Amino acid sequence: MTAFEPPFDWMGTSNDSNDEQFGHVVELASIDDADRFDAVLVGEPFDRAVIGRKGAAEGPKALRQRLAGTKTHHFDAGPVESVADLGDVTFGDADPESVLDLQDRVRAVASQVHDADAFPVFLGGDNSLTFPNAAPLLDSGTLGVVNFDAHLDVREVRGDPTSGTPYRQLYDAGLDAYACVGARHFETSTSYAEFVRERDGEVVTSEEVGDDAIGAVDRALDAMDDVDRIYVSVDLDVLDATAAPGVSAPTPGGISTRELFRMVRLLGAENRLAGFEVVECAPPLESGTANLTATAGARTIAHLLSARQTRGER
Image 1 (tube, rainbow, N blue to C red):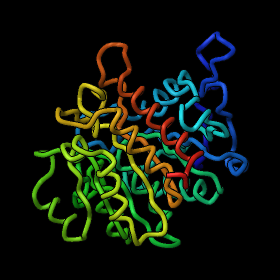
Image 2 (image 1 turned 30 degrees about the vertical axis):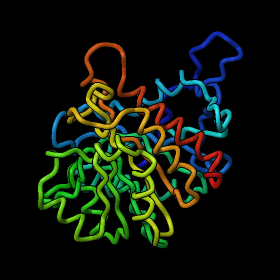
Image 3 (image 1 turned 135 degrees about the horizontal axis):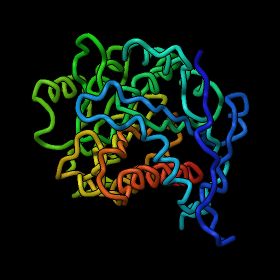
Image 4 (image 1 turned 60 degrees about the horizontal axis):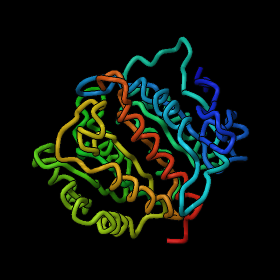
Protein backbone atom coordinates (compact mmCIF):
# COMPACT_ATOMS: atom_id res chain seq x y z
CA MET A 1 0.00 0.00 0.00
CA THR A 2 1.33 3.43 -0.93
CA ALA A 3 1.75 5.86 1.95
CA PHE A 4 3.75 8.89 3.06
CA GLU A 5 6.39 8.33 5.68
CA PRO A 6 7.52 11.40 7.69
CA PRO A 7 11.28 11.70 7.11
CA PHE A 8 12.37 13.63 10.20
CA ASP A 9 11.30 16.48 12.46
CA TRP A 10 12.07 19.85 10.93
CA MET A 11 14.31 21.91 13.20
CA GLY A 12 16.40 25.00 12.58
CA THR A 13 20.12 24.80 13.25
CA SER A 14 20.64 28.32 14.64
CA ASN A 15 20.49 29.28 18.32
CA ASP A 16 19.74 32.92 17.43
CA SER A 17 16.00 33.54 17.89
CA ASN A 18 16.12 36.06 15.02
CA ASP A 19 17.32 33.44 12.56
CA GLU A 20 14.14 32.09 11.02
CA GLN A 21 15.15 29.04 8.99
CA PHE A 22 13.14 26.60 6.92
CA GLY A 23 13.54 24.17 9.79
CA HIS A 24 11.41 26.53 11.85
CA VAL A 25 8.60 27.09 9.34
CA VAL A 26 8.12 23.80 7.46
CA GLU A 27 5.31 21.76 9.02
CA LEU A 28 4.61 18.06 8.74
CA ALA A 29 1.20 17.48 7.17
CA SER A 30 -0.96 14.79 5.63
CA ILE A 31 -2.28 14.79 2.07
CA ASP A 32 -5.70 15.68 3.50
CA ASP A 33 -4.29 18.90 4.96
CA ALA A 34 -2.16 19.88 1.97
CA ASP A 35 -4.56 22.56 0.76
CA ARG A 36 -3.82 24.65 3.88
CA PHE A 37 -0.34 25.39 2.54
CA ASP A 38 1.03 27.30 -0.43
CA ALA A 39 3.52 24.54 -1.21
CA VAL A 40 4.13 20.94 -0.15
CA LEU A 41 7.32 18.88 -0.26
CA VAL A 42 7.20 15.23 -1.33
CA GLY A 43 10.24 12.96 -1.07
CA GLU A 44 10.86 10.20 -3.62
CA PRO A 45 13.88 8.17 -2.42
CA PHE A 46 14.34 5.93 -5.47
CA ASP A 47 17.31 5.55 -7.83
CA ARG A 48 16.92 2.14 -9.44
CA ALA A 49 16.57 3.68 -12.94
CA VAL A 50 19.92 5.53 -12.95
CA ILE A 51 22.01 4.73 -16.02
CA GLY A 52 25.29 5.57 -14.28
CA ARG A 53 26.27 5.84 -10.64
CA LYS A 54 23.56 5.37 -8.03
CA GLY A 55 23.08 7.37 -4.84
CA ALA A 56 20.08 9.61 -5.57
CA ALA A 57 17.87 7.54 -3.27
CA GLU A 58 19.49 9.50 -0.45
CA GLY A 59 18.71 12.82 -2.13
CA PRO A 60 15.43 13.69 -0.35
CA LYS A 61 16.95 13.35 3.11
CA ALA A 62 20.00 15.45 2.19
CA LEU A 63 17.91 18.15 0.52
CA ARG A 64 15.72 18.45 3.60
CA GLN A 65 18.69 18.59 5.94
CA ARG A 66 20.34 21.39 3.99
CA LEU A 67 17.06 23.26 3.53
CA ALA A 68 16.30 23.06 7.25
CA GLY A 69 19.38 25.16 8.03
CA THR A 70 18.72 27.71 5.27
CA LYS A 71 17.24 31.07 6.30
CA THR A 72 13.83 31.90 4.85
CA HIS A 73 14.47 35.56 3.97
CA HIS A 74 14.90 36.69 0.36
CA PHE A 75 15.85 40.37 -0.07
CA ASP A 76 13.21 41.00 -2.74
CA ALA A 77 10.43 38.65 -1.61
CA GLY A 78 10.79 38.63 2.16
CA PRO A 79 10.47 35.43 4.21
CA VAL A 80 9.10 32.19 2.79
CA GLU A 81 6.03 30.94 4.64
CA SER A 82 3.31 28.29 4.44
CA VAL A 83 5.30 25.18 3.45
CA ALA A 84 4.43 21.63 4.47
CA ASP A 85 6.25 18.33 4.16
CA LEU A 86 4.06 15.34 3.28
CA GLY A 87 6.98 12.95 3.83
CA ASP A 88 8.56 10.30 1.62
CA VAL A 89 6.62 8.08 -0.75
CA THR A 90 6.78 4.51 0.54
CA PHE A 91 5.26 1.26 -0.63
CA GLY A 92 5.59 -0.77 2.54
CA ASP A 93 6.41 -4.40 1.81
CA ALA A 94 5.01 -4.22 -1.75
CA ASP A 95 8.26 -3.23 -3.45
CA PRO A 96 7.72 -2.45 -7.16
CA GLU A 97 9.07 -5.19 -9.38
CA SER A 98 10.25 -2.94 -12.22
CA VAL A 99 10.96 0.72 -12.97
CA LEU A 100 7.73 0.85 -14.99
CA ASP A 101 5.84 -0.49 -11.98
CA LEU A 102 7.56 2.08 -9.78
CA GLN A 103 6.59 4.88 -12.18
CA ASP A 104 2.97 3.72 -12.18
CA ARG A 105 2.82 3.78 -8.40
CA VAL A 106 4.57 7.15 -8.12
CA ARG A 107 2.19 8.54 -10.74
CA ALA A 108 -0.78 7.53 -8.60
CA VAL A 109 0.74 9.36 -5.63
CA ALA A 110 1.64 12.41 -7.72
CA SER A 111 -1.95 12.56 -8.99
CA GLN A 112 -3.17 12.83 -5.39
CA VAL A 113 -0.68 15.60 -4.69
CA HIS A 114 -1.61 17.58 -7.81
CA ASP A 115 -5.29 17.25 -6.87
CA ALA A 116 -4.68 18.54 -3.35
CA ASP A 117 -4.76 22.22 -4.36
CA ALA A 118 -1.23 22.92 -3.12
CA PHE A 119 1.88 23.57 -5.18
CA PRO A 120 4.01 20.37 -5.24
CA VAL A 121 7.79 20.32 -4.87
CA PHE A 122 9.10 16.80 -5.50
CA LEU A 123 12.47 15.84 -3.98
CA GLY A 124 14.25 13.14 -5.98
CA GLY A 125 15.39 10.58 -6.48
CA ASP A 126 16.49 9.89 -10.01
CA ASN A 127 15.37 11.58 -13.22
CA SER A 128 13.04 8.73 -14.27
CA LEU A 129 10.59 10.11 -11.67
CA THR A 130 10.00 13.20 -13.82
CA PHE A 131 7.60 11.20 -15.96
CA PRO A 132 5.20 10.12 -13.18
CA ASN A 133 5.53 13.50 -11.43
CA ALA A 134 4.50 15.51 -14.50
CA ALA A 135 2.25 13.05 -16.38
CA PRO A 136 -0.88 13.64 -14.25
CA LEU A 137 -0.91 17.24 -15.50
CA LEU A 138 -1.52 15.90 -19.03
CA ASP A 139 -4.95 14.69 -17.96
CA SER A 140 -6.43 18.19 -18.04
CA GLY A 141 -5.24 20.80 -20.50
CA THR A 142 -1.96 21.33 -22.32
CA LEU A 143 1.43 20.97 -20.64
CA GLY A 144 4.95 22.18 -21.25
CA VAL A 145 8.09 21.19 -19.37
CA VAL A 146 11.20 23.28 -18.75
CA ASN A 147 14.09 20.95 -18.03
CA PHE A 148 17.27 22.31 -16.44
CA ASP A 149 19.65 19.54 -17.41
CA ALA A 150 22.97 18.73 -19.01
CA HIS A 151 21.13 16.13 -21.12
CA LEU A 152 17.90 15.98 -23.10
CA ASP A 153 16.79 12.63 -21.62
CA VAL A 154 14.70 11.59 -24.62
CA ARG A 155 16.14 8.11 -25.06
CA GLU A 156 13.81 5.43 -26.33
CA VAL A 157 12.43 3.04 -23.73
CA ARG A 158 13.97 -0.35 -24.39
CA GLY A 159 12.54 -2.75 -21.83
CA ASP A 160 12.38 -0.75 -18.60
CA PRO A 161 12.49 3.08 -18.42
CA THR A 162 15.70 4.71 -17.22
CA SER A 163 16.84 8.11 -15.99
CA GLY A 164 17.45 8.91 -19.67
CA THR A 165 13.88 8.29 -20.91
CA PRO A 166 11.45 10.59 -19.01
CA TYR A 167 10.89 13.19 -21.71
CA ARG A 168 10.46 10.58 -24.45
CA GLN A 169 7.80 9.03 -22.22
CA LEU A 170 6.13 12.41 -21.71
CA TYR A 171 6.20 13.09 -25.46
CA ASP A 172 4.61 9.69 -26.06
CA ALA A 173 1.93 10.57 -23.50
CA GLY A 174 1.07 13.85 -25.24
CA LEU A 175 3.53 16.49 -24.00
CA ASP A 176 2.81 19.74 -25.83
CA ALA A 177 6.06 21.69 -25.34
CA TYR A 178 9.60 21.09 -24.12
CA ALA A 179 12.64 23.24 -23.39
CA CYS A 180 16.00 22.11 -22.06
CA VAL A 181 18.08 24.85 -20.43
CA GLY A 182 21.76 24.30 -19.69
CA ALA A 183 22.37 21.46 -22.14
CA ARG A 184 26.03 20.52 -22.45
CA HIS A 185 27.86 20.03 -25.74
CA PHE A 186 29.13 16.46 -26.29
CA GLU A 187 26.58 15.01 -23.84
CA THR A 188 23.71 14.22 -26.23
CA SER A 189 23.63 12.06 -29.35
CA THR A 190 22.69 13.71 -32.64
CA SER A 191 19.57 11.58 -33.09
CA TYR A 192 18.16 12.76 -29.75
CA ALA A 193 18.92 16.42 -30.50
CA GLU A 194 17.11 16.00 -33.82
CA PHE A 195 14.18 14.29 -32.06
CA VAL A 196 13.64 17.39 -29.92
CA ARG A 197 14.12 19.90 -32.74
CA GLU A 198 11.71 18.02 -35.02
CA ARG A 199 9.06 18.57 -32.33
CA ASP A 200 9.86 22.29 -32.03
CA GLY A 201 11.51 21.81 -28.68
CA GLU A 202 13.90 24.50 -27.46
CA VAL A 203 17.49 23.74 -26.46
CA VAL A 204 19.49 26.43 -24.65
CA THR A 205 23.11 25.43 -24.08
CA SER A 206 25.09 26.14 -20.93
CA GLU A 207 27.23 28.57 -22.93
CA GLU A 208 24.14 30.50 -23.96
CA VAL A 209 23.01 30.62 -20.34
CA GLY A 210 26.40 32.06 -19.43
CA ASP A 211 25.96 34.77 -22.05
CA ASP A 212 22.44 35.73 -20.99
CA ALA A 213 20.57 33.87 -18.25
CA ILE A 214 17.47 36.04 -18.51
CA GLY A 215 17.38 35.55 -22.26
CA ALA A 216 17.64 31.80 -21.71
CA VAL A 217 14.47 31.86 -19.59
CA ASP A 218 12.72 34.01 -22.17
CA ARG A 219 13.53 31.44 -24.86
CA ALA A 220 12.20 28.65 -22.67
CA LEU A 221 8.98 30.56 -21.97
CA ASP A 222 8.57 31.39 -25.67
CA ALA A 223 8.50 27.62 -26.26
CA MET A 224 5.71 27.42 -23.66
CA ASP A 225 3.52 30.08 -25.31
CA ASP A 226 0.64 27.78 -26.21
CA VAL A 227 0.37 25.63 -23.07
CA ASP A 228 -1.97 25.93 -20.10
CA ARG A 229 0.46 24.72 -17.47
CA ILE A 230 4.21 24.44 -16.99
CA TYR A 231 6.23 21.90 -15.00
CA VAL A 232 9.85 22.69 -14.10
CA SER A 233 12.48 20.04 -13.46
CA VAL A 234 15.98 20.69 -12.13
CA ASP A 235 18.45 17.88 -12.66
CA LEU A 236 21.41 18.99 -10.56
CA ASP A 237 23.88 17.75 -13.18
CA VAL A 238 22.99 20.96 -15.04
CA LEU A 239 25.44 22.63 -12.65
CA ASP A 240 29.15 22.58 -13.28
CA ALA A 241 30.87 19.63 -11.61
CA THR A 242 32.64 22.02 -9.23
CA ALA A 243 29.26 23.16 -7.88
CA ALA A 244 27.51 19.77 -7.91
CA PRO A 245 29.96 16.87 -7.69
CA GLY A 246 27.39 14.58 -6.07
CA VAL A 247 25.40 13.60 -9.17
CA SER A 248 25.48 10.46 -11.27
CA ALA A 249 27.17 12.19 -14.23
CA PRO A 250 29.19 15.27 -13.20
CA THR A 251 30.96 17.04 -16.07
CA PRO A 252 32.73 20.38 -16.61
CA GLY A 253 31.16 23.21 -18.56
CA GLY A 254 27.91 23.47 -16.62
CA ILE A 255 26.03 26.54 -15.43
CA SER A 256 26.70 28.26 -12.11
CA THR A 257 24.51 28.14 -9.02
CA ARG A 258 23.88 31.88 -9.33
CA GLU A 259 22.62 31.43 -12.89
CA LEU A 260 20.38 28.56 -11.84
CA PHE A 261 18.92 30.49 -8.90
CA ARG A 262 18.17 33.51 -11.09
CA MET A 263 16.45 31.43 -13.76
CA VAL A 264 14.44 29.40 -11.27
CA ARG A 265 13.18 32.58 -9.63
CA LEU A 266 12.03 33.94 -12.99
CA LEU A 267 10.15 30.73 -13.74
CA GLY A 268 8.81 30.54 -10.20
CA ALA A 269 6.96 33.81 -10.74
CA GLU A 270 5.14 32.33 -13.74
CA ASN A 271 1.42 32.00 -13.00
CA ARG A 272 1.09 28.82 -15.08
CA LEU A 273 3.66 26.92 -13.00
CA ALA A 274 1.98 23.73 -11.76
CA GLY A 275 4.83 21.71 -10.28
CA PHE A 276 8.56 21.65 -9.54
CA GLU A 277 11.20 19.05 -8.78
CA VAL A 278 14.87 18.68 -7.93
CA VAL A 279 16.36 15.34 -8.98
CA GLU A 280 19.69 13.50 -9.13
CA CYS A 281 21.08 14.72 -5.81
CA ALA A 282 23.32 11.81 -4.82
CA PRO A 283 25.17 12.59 -1.54
CA PRO A 284 27.19 9.33 -1.42
CA LEU A 285 28.91 10.33 -4.66
CA GLU A 286 30.33 13.55 -3.18
CA SER A 287 33.61 13.17 -1.32
CA GLY A 288 34.27 15.28 1.74
CA THR A 289 31.76 16.93 4.06
CA ALA A 290 30.84 20.15 2.21
CA ASN A 291 27.57 18.73 0.83
CA LEU A 292 27.80 21.20 -2.05
CA THR A 293 25.29 19.34 -4.22
CA ALA A 294 22.57 19.07 -1.59
CA THR A 295 23.18 22.68 -0.55
CA ALA A 296 22.79 23.85 -4.14
CA GLY A 297 19.61 21.80 -4.50
CA ALA A 298 18.14 23.09 -1.24
CA ARG A 299 18.81 26.70 -2.15
CA THR A 300 17.29 26.13 -5.58
CA ILE A 301 14.12 25.07 -3.77
CA ALA A 302 14.32 28.13 -1.49
CA HIS A 303 14.60 30.45 -4.50
CA LEU A 304 11.65 28.77 -6.18
CA LEU A 305 9.48 29.06 -3.06
CA SER A 306 10.37 32.72 -2.59
CA ALA A 307 9.45 33.44 -6.20
CA ARG A 308 6.05 31.80 -5.71
CA GLN A 309 5.24 34.58 -3.26
CA THR A 310 5.88 37.30 -5.84
CA ARG A 311 4.47 35.63 -8.96
CA GLY A 312 2.78 37.93 -11.40
CA GLU A 313 5.15 40.79 -10.49
CA ARG A 314 7.79 40.04 -13.12
